[in-house]
Image (cartoon, rainbow, N blue to C red):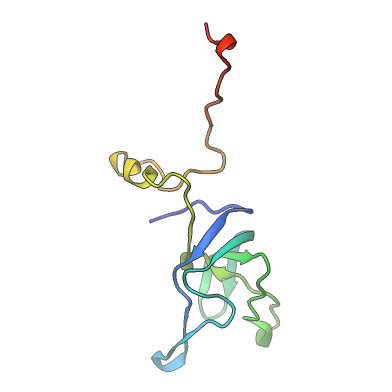
Length: 120
């Protein structure tokens, strides 16, 4: 499933686990599963172990990840978050059209409500 993330979007953490060497998995100290955050940066990130990935930085959260390698405030993997969608049925309607994104893009055109006198 793909999401279109953008700056200012509210997202919920769905994965707060970090894999370590040897198959050990620990909880990420900077984020908590189920908590809602606001995105302050979105972009491609590169890590020498994890490779290239879509990353997000969150308002009020310093990841502390990567400081040992000289990268301050490294982005979290976007796959660990899902956007909050106002329209709860939009995901179901999107299933009817396989080419439609699950979450509406920020560029999506919106209908403007007209006043009664503007209608012809």
